[in-house]
Length: 137
Image (cartoon, rainbow, N blue to C red):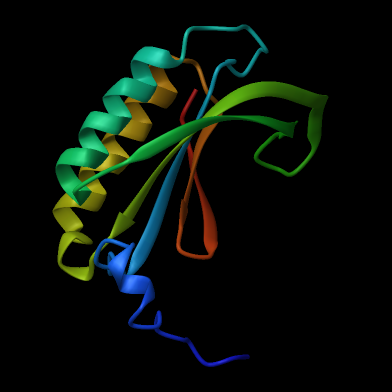
């Protein structure tokens, strides 16, 4: 693995100071429920942007497409592949913002999104790991 290189001094004349961050957090907000029914995900995306911006100093979202298999709690495939439009809301987080209180706030948001949009689970990524919160039926 190569050593991390700092920008050359001449580059700094065009760039703003480098944003230092310790963690990356991504909330995944699909536009279909567990039954494949579409819904408008934009209000949820806006809510996530505002929340992550408040807690972590900023957030950026972009549309993406996703596919997954519906699997039950025993690991059996319930249905084939479900394709959906997904909004990914990303924040770059300094260690002092990566608090239990802030993580609880984004977790509460994802659980609310999941319940109100009829999801089987909600997904998020922290650093190099993908995580899921299973929602109760």
